[in-house]
Image 1: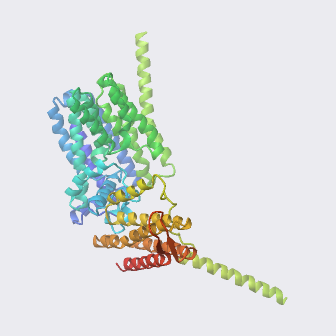
Image 2: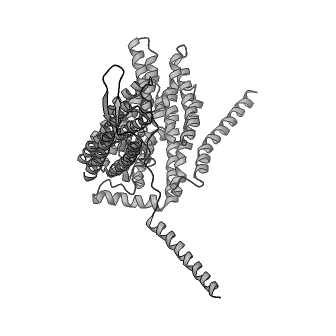
Length: 378
Length: 190
């Protein structure tokens, strides 16, 4: 089961290089070119096949994830065994290509504007540096920095490690994501001491794809804010101040965690209730504010999934189940673009339908189970 | 018959001319309309309680606008702002304050040369900004000419508690005009 899960992600990591931007040359080495060329041909020429393949990969990943989650005690008898599994898994995903989103390139180019060109990214758009080579493959280059100053400062590390090489920079950025991912998984274990909680988050295919394949920064924001909330519970003033600072830092990455501020005043609430409220607030923000701003981006699900991973098991299993089916629905949103090559036309409608279907099926299944148990009781 | 033929000839001629002009515009992207460089609305003026705050923010912004391109934006913004301030003050015949604002505007414009040089030294393509400075320069000069024509050449400034002094307004305009010209020329050569 775990081997199959590993192999399917290894396969995804290989296939991801087919999604390389046509204007991006990672390396001119013949071996690299001969590796990427056939994959590139499949992804850009055989769109329906690619979409179908991605669909099968996703279904397999979620199926195996469910299996591992159910048999977690048997599969991972100790936390060490889980981390021994997560580490190589993170490694193979770190070397993958950020296939379904261009955000990583945006982070890279913004870091370059700041640390190489020494320009204020809140004043100068990447596109204003007309001879910047990253513009060939960066999208949203006509926008000022989209993230807060803490994120910009953090990007100095992978930017410096990248040493001007694009591939090296991509991997450096994802190494940073992997660091936050493993740290957050450890935090979940440290707080809950429950393997199910760690597995719920760590092996969720959406988390693995969005954090380790695509390299989104949402987990950095969430790790800081949730650590902040946990520290805020302490009675020591130093810890509480540190907690508040972490929450403020997280808001200085993305503003989304500002919705968690009211939770600081609910001192009498139990940890479970705080995290349930946090999950709901982040879920509502994701569902309502996401489409108002732009659209329902799958990586925003990390907000509520990370928070939900602190909930008690099996008390809030229903919320986890919802989180998992919703994750599947959100990842399916990539399929219309893969099949068609454009976002417009029937794309928005198809994306909505694909997102809703797994949730509706799960809802009906839940309703059926509820009715059966009701009949049995009566 | 003759007039009908002539009419037909004229119609064909006009049609050909119309098509030719259309093609000329489409193929050569010819346009008589040029996106004009826009000056901002006047900000807080001297005498307003927030004027000092606004000036302080202007000074602080210098550190926020780090980087060669950012500095171009900063100095251009500042130069525009102070020119509009000067224009308004000249219109209200507040010549002493107006000349001070004009001097600040010119100084900010002059600083653009160093900003562009810095950008070029850092291997940044500054062409867009050079064009923008050129556009800004011509708009500034236009404003200066119009102010010069509506302002006396000299003005005797008599403050309440000090001796009076002559303000050579015309010379101030000429000085600002020449400085803008020379800055634009220098920037274009970089």
